[in-house]
Length: 272
Ligand code: C2E
Ligand code: CA
Ligand code: CA
Ligand code: CA
View (cartoon, rainbow, N blue to C red):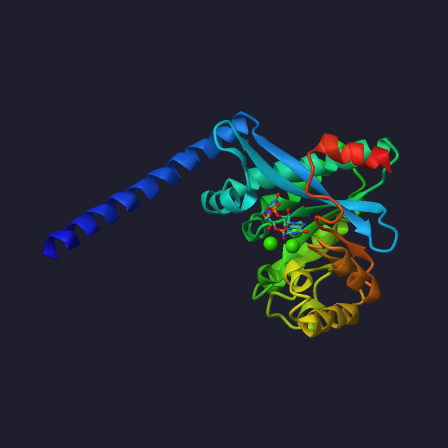
């Protein structure tokens, strides 16, 4: 038993070393990915619930790794945050979205494009200058661009954050609260921030069959805030029927389209 224990420990150490090595390797590859231009921004349509008309899109980043294939953001965003690479990635995604907004507008499709921010980006002084630089370079109308943040990013950082949001407003950028309903902040608290859109988290839409009352509570909270509301993660006709019955104006989900590469999104726009 003693022998086995030692082996188990040795194995554990090896696994730990592998994990650390794997992480370091991934980090090195992540740095290279910028030079090799391996990041792609995909766009998922945001539609009017009643008409199905595409009115906007959410920009979602992917990493096209030469061996691993298309890597999901859940895998590399945390690593970007812990290494500080998130500033560079965030700037890249926002700049792509701004240029894409202009390209689609010139093709006759004026869409509002939302870009995710991570907590770490809110703390860097560079955010505002990165955003302003991308707006200038693209010539995009900032009113057609929106930043998505989550409730946890708002908690406990009042004054600094309010000043930052004031500056975002001065730039005329929109602000959406993502994953609404999953945080713990109360409405009075949320009301202090210049948010124009609430995105109801997909867990409520997907949990409708089991807990309709909870989903409807979240909707009534959203209604109290008197903001634009987007239902996320709409996958079925039943869910869409509920969204419409609730009077939710916009939705996003696989029922309409998955996040698409630019060319596919363009084809979808042209087909409508
Ligand atoms: P999120 O901001 O909540 O984005 C929505 C996620 O839900 C996306 O996953 C999207 O593909 C997925 N989704 C959309 N419709 C449906 C549906 O009908 N059913 C289901 N089950 N899922 C749906 P994705 O693209 O893997 O992104 C995951 C998360 O990674 C995002 O969650 C966001 O937090 C983060 N992320 C993505 N792109 C960026 C970025 O450019 N910057 C930052 N900071 N974070 C990003
Ligand atoms: Ca989002
Ligand atoms: Ca979300
Ligand atoms: Ca999220």
